Amino acid sequence: MRIAFVGLGIMGKHMARNLITAGHEVTVFDIVPAAVDELVRAGATPAGSASAAAATSEITITMLPDGPEVQAAILGPEGVLAGAQAGSAIVDMSSISPLVAQKVGAACAGKGIGFLDAPVSGGEPKAADGTLAIMAGGDAALFERVRPVFDVLGASATLTGPVGAGNVTKLANQIMVACNIAAMGEALVLATKAGLDPEVVFNAVKGGLAGSTVLNAKAPMVINRNFKPGFRIKLHQKDLRNALLAAESMKVSLPLTSLVQQALISLMNSGAGDLDHAAIVTWIEQMAGCEVRKPS
Ligand code: NAD
Image (cartoon, rainbow, N blue to C red; front, side, top):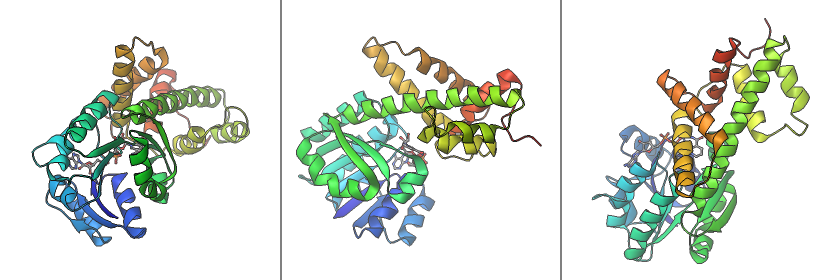
C-alpha cells in the first residue's frame, strides 16, 4: 500500500520503519527535519508537508503528542485533510481526547475521507518489535481495510466502538498503568526501607497475583535507576488530564487517577517531565526519604 506517516518521534519512527520493512511504500513528514532524514535513510520518501504526504497515499497515519498537534496536522492549512484523496483514509494513532477524535472524524467524514482513532499501548519496545496493542474506534468496514497495516504494527488490534472509542479505551489503559506504577512505588519503597533488596522482592512477587506487565517493565528500571524514556512523564500527565476531563463530562469520579495526576504535575515542576513514567516512583521516594535501589 501507499502509506503516509506523519509524526516520527519515539513511537512513530519505529512504526514507519516496520511498514517499510513489510514492503509498503511509505512517505513521511515531521516538523523536525532530522526525524525525516532518519526515515529517508531507512527507505522512506520525504514530503514537505502533511498534506503533500497524504496526497499520494491510500492511508495516512498520524502519531503526534496530543490533540492540538493532531488538529494542526490533520485540519490545518497544510494538513492531511487538505491533501487527502477522496476514498482514502486517515488513521490517528496518537493518544488524544475522545472529544477531539470525534471532531476530527466529523471533519474527515464531511470530505468523504474515512477516519479511525487507533491509539496504542506497549511503548517503544513494542513499537520497535511491531507488537503493539491497538485499540480502535470507527467504522467496521474501514477497520477491516486497515487491518493489514495494523497487523504489521501490532500483535493485536481491537475495534471497541465508534470514532472516539479507541481513545476512551486508551484512557482506561493509561489509568491502570499510572496507578500500577504508583502502587509499585509504594510497595518497593516500603520493602527497601525495611532493609530488603527490592530486586529480591520483585522476583518473589512477579509470578503471583501482583505480577503484571507494568511490574516486569518498570521495576527493573527503578531498581537500576534508569529513567530514560520510554514514555515521558509529561505525556502521561496529558493522558490523565484527558481522562479526568472526559470523566468530568460524564460525572464520573476518579479519585486514584486524580491523586496520581497531582504526582505527575509535581514531577513536571521539579524538572522530571521528560523522564520515563517509571519516575512516578521518585515522588513516593521523596516523601519516604528512601530510594529504591539494591543494598550496597
Ligand atoms: P514524541 O514526542 O516522541 O513524537 C511526536 C512527534 O510528532 C515528534 O517527532 C514531533 O516533532 C512530531 N510533531 C509534532 N507536531 C507535529 C506536526 N504538527 N506535524 C508533524 N509532526 C509533528 O511522542 P511519542 O512518544 O512518539 O508519542 C506519540 C503518541 O503516542 C502520543 O500521543 C503518546 O501519548 C502515544 N504513546 C506513546 C508511547 C510511548 O511509550 N512513547 C506509548 C503509547 C502511546
